[in-house]
Image 1: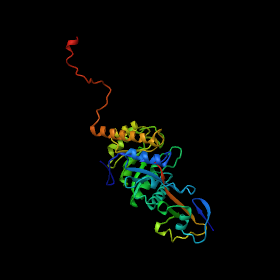
Image 2: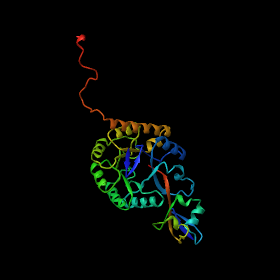
Image 3: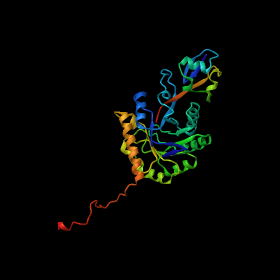
Image 4: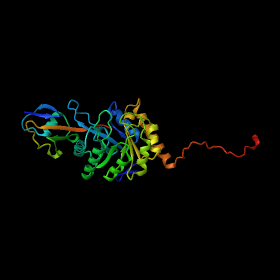
Length: 66
Length: 255
């Protein structure tokens, strides 16, 4: 099934949680914030929040800025 | 000592972390600046380069992170970024930035005020980036801004303190700290802002794009400290008429 991750289509296995996706992407869960369908998720939810088909996921983090 | 929202700062130079040629140069320049508050931005994770994490480069025991809402074009976008920042572990401090026009990056005063009102209600410590408008500064202060951050010149232009006379009015009226942000392109610009009584300055581009960012960071630190010292010492007044520095008496032997 497909989700929209940071604006791009991405295929994931049904039942994939945010926690699993972050691990697959090589991301430290403590360094990113996830927003799914415009709802900001708490870190505690990452392992239990399962992505639905067509979910719009944004993975955001701090970068250098002024 | 400078105090904002109950937190004290020894250094009156705040620095941005953008535009550096590498994370290592950024880290060294920030260290050299003596800053205790650094700005950061929020962006989508680059999924092709997931290892690039600024939070690992800077010690949060040493620096207070001031996440910005850069990229927001209206209050709603800024509020969304603020909430994401808090959820990312960015804390309550926020440099509120609402810039609808990419050409000038000038801040939208109405959206900035609206966002300040909302974010203060939500418990954020809001430092709004604003045009050097004394009335707006008062309105933002009344809305609960912890400091106001008038621009010296548009972001990244290095043009200096073009807004001097307006910033002087803001300083004379403000009950909250005034941080001159944006456009300061040389240590002399920062020194001038401090001499006229700014509580702090925020510098990014001028340090990041310097030939040697680490030395430029040191130069800004000295200028900020010299400017503040001069302000506290009390500058003499400027005027059109000459006033001799040497005694005007005791010259009878000449003529």
